[in-house]
Image (tube, rainbow, N blue to C red):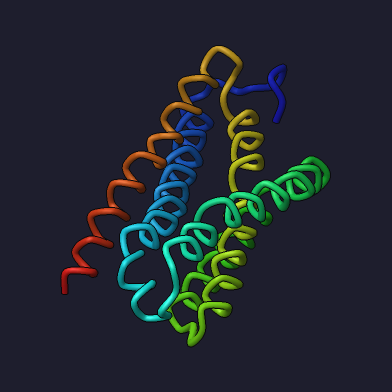
Amino acid sequence: MTETDFDPTPKTRRYAWFVLVMLLLLYFINYADRTLANALLEKIKETYQVSDTYMGFVIGPAFAFVYCLAAIPIARFADRTNRVKIIALGALVWSLFTMLSGLAKTPEMFAVSRFGVGIGEAAFLAPAYSLLSDYFPPKRRAFAFAIMNLGVYFGGAFGNIGGTALAAS
């Protein structure tokens, strides 16, 4: 569906909102997962007996580098293929690597797992914006993007609160 054939019927509008809510929930999970590791940083450092520098590098610049490096080819791929499948596969990948992060026995396994999370999460944002552009006309896109971006703040807060609670237990 393009801007010129946007159908403003209630059925189409309801589906557009359904898509937006699903993307908001995925973005929430994406950020909750990302910030959970930050909230558990002291426990993770203690488990692996690694320095602040090592952990800061793994969950900071190294994660960001892998995420950004993966996001560009994934976004280009999303321009030519099914964005819903890319987002779904990305969610599967980041979920799998989140689980592997929790099972990691060494700091290197943890780092590789977090990099896998970054690759999976990189499959979300560009395809999600593109998908929302199909469902919302230009005059409503900024609003739809703003709603989806609430996932960053609520997911981040949830990850920090949940991680802090887990660390305290």
